[in-house]
Image (tube, chains in turn purple, yellow):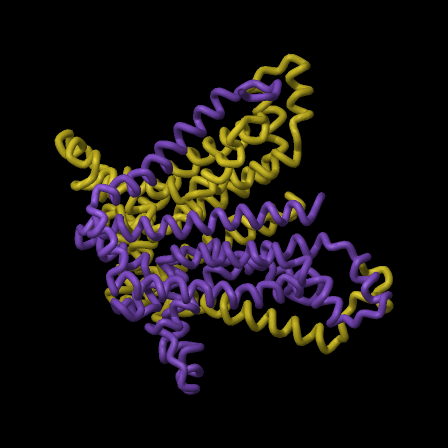
Amino acid sequence: MARGPLPGFRLAMGTTLVYLSLLVLIPLATVVLRSFEMPWARLLEVVTSPRALASYRLTFGAAAIAAAVNLIFGVLVAWVLVRYRFPGRRILDALVDLPFALPTAVAGIALASVYAENGWLGAPLAALGVKVAYTRLAVVVALTFVGLPFVVRTVQPVLADLEPAIEEAAATLGASRWTTLRRVLLPELGPAAATGFVLALARGLGEYGSVIFVAGNLPLKSEITALLIMVQLEQYDYPAATAIALVFLCASFALLVLLNRLSGRRARSRPR
Amino acid sequence: MSASRFEDPRAEPAWARSALIVVAIGFLGIFLLVPLAAVFTQAFSKGVAVYLAALRDPVAQSAIRLTLLVAAVVVPVNTLFGIAAAWAITRFRFRGRNLLVTLIDLPLSVSPVVAGMLFVLLFGAQGWLGPWLGRHEIRILFALPGIVLATLFVTMPFVARQLIPLMEAQGRNEEEAALSMGASGWQILGWVTLPAIRWGLLYGIVLTAARAMGEFGAVSVVSGHIRGKTNTIPLHVEILYNEYQFAAAFAVSSLLALIALATLVAQAFLGRRLGSRSPQS
């Protein structure tokens, strides 16, 4: 089955498959099997209860808005980091990965303190009449934080690899800088930016730690789906938690398929 | 790019440049620097004595010990898995290869809360193995093994994800040359492969360790929050915060923030050696 002269296929593949099965595949299969143990009517009732529906709307809506904010600013930040030289650029570049490195609980309490009504940013915003902490807006802010690196890091390498010739050609042909950006550069960056957007969206859907400290966590209003599962687990309502987790897994799986499609398109559009 | 700087057709007007730089710095400043600065400011808001007391507290000390213990188990296990998976995937052609790569990435797209829940379903009192474990008095949930399992799950892909593209790019010529000169599999791994991938491997280990020490959602589900026993540093932070001991919560958080900053420094350093940066999550 395996082709290649090097030794160690059986050992390496065996280790990989056994470990992957025990740690990931069997536990994931448990969720699916357990939710099928429930009567269908009950399953449907749980996953479409008003509280669950409200949590999906909030989670998906906030994750989508946050990913869109990150799409716009991510492309801009990637552009500035790749194309311009200014003092502090390298520090800023390294800092982009902070949301990957900083534990979500720490991010959560930091955001709560910053956006509280007497916080550094919360106070000026409150003066403008915008309340952030313990509202749905706080969910968007937290998800923007956790999703920030994705678009920057997917667009950056593509931007760095772009041939200068195509922009020079556009300029030679009389295109203004703005036209070149719109007609030449943005289409080139599109697939990478879309991948970053989907990654940020996927990360935002499942996020828990950074959100629960800043959101109000009120059922039907500011309760995210991950928290709803947590609440049900704490009440030992395992069937309900399992059913909602299944919805979650289906959503993640759909995004994973979408990502594979996108990366296929990227590979095809950039033969290298 | 800099050779023909003043005639570069790719240069934007100076005002546009400055405006873009200001917007980028403003965005990153508001979303990243301000929260980071808040952690350290709040940590010292009640003075150095309170800061040190929060870290010396016996419950905090036990959380730190538990976190280090979990990382000490998780990092080597997932490092070995990462090397084995990368070897199988990049050194051989077989059917289902792309599927395997996707499966390795799977934990990244599972919500941490769901990740923790998986182990509750398996090992909890109502779980499949729960009754059997109960009869034999084996504690997995609300104890160290559960925390280790949940952490293994969430950090599983990091080393493999670093190594697979790296080893793919390097190809297997050198290893095949070593083979033709009579080297054994382990000799090839130790003398040819590992030296060639050392920076990527180290980077994967750094990411695994950072995530292992900082994981919150998954560990929160399986730990049972037994103070002084099954609380890791992030869980200790949560308890302090919910008890309105803000200065102490931020003091303990500052440890995790320092680990995060060290990760970023390691990343900047290793990233330069790797030559290219890869989005890691």
